[in-house]
Amino acid sequence: MKRHLIFALLLIPILASAQNNFDLQYDPQTVTTVTGTVLSPIFYNPANPAAGPQAVVISSGGVAQTVFLGPGWYVNQFASGLRTGEVISVTASRRIVMGSQYLVASTVTSGGRTFALRTSNGIPLWGVQSNYLPPAGAGMVAIDLPYSTTLENIDGMIISSSLLQTTESTVPYRVTTVRASDTGSLWQVVLAPDSYLSQKGIGVARGAFIVVTGARVKLNGERALVATTVGQRTDVVQLRMIQGTPVFPVTPLAGAAF
Image (cartoon, rainbow, N blue to C red; front, side, top):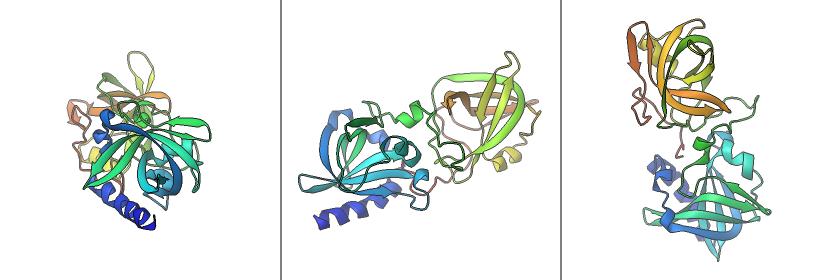
């Protein structure tokens, strides 16, 4: 048993560096339900567990298995009570990486309660239900930036701005609150790192006027746009490809495999 556990623990950082987003490998055809005893929770960012992905090693039938859960800030709202020695049941897709098997959980049942992490097709719920963000006062915690194929166009005046840390990049993104010219409604608009916006001549000061095209999502329960293009005056700057990939340089946070 000790040999299996040591191997599982050693495998985790390898997977974190080798897989940019192993959720894309979730296979509904390999879904299984496994019941086991928690041997050890795994935090990719021990200094700030909420900022990195979390996994758990369980013993089932005398075999240690690694179960990937999700971003710490999301997992903690549902399954923060997972402790060594606790018996849990997980529904998960069984995957093989470099010849070794692991599980990507869609649900976790603990203490008679079932927590959803992904849909039955493996879509992470922290992207679909992106109103689940760290509580106020918890500090800047990296989130997995949601994205969608629903594009929206708005123009209006910036009335405030802040920074948002994502797992996509070690550098925070500028987020502006824009009052739409046509309806007067407020939108949160996720742009890019300040250095990139400055380089492209995009001003984000209060009172500045911007034109944005972006993917319609929700952040903290409020409608928001993840900008694909942003413009001021006659200049239009592309920030992301149509599928959401940033065009500006990014360095993902260490261990940000989700």
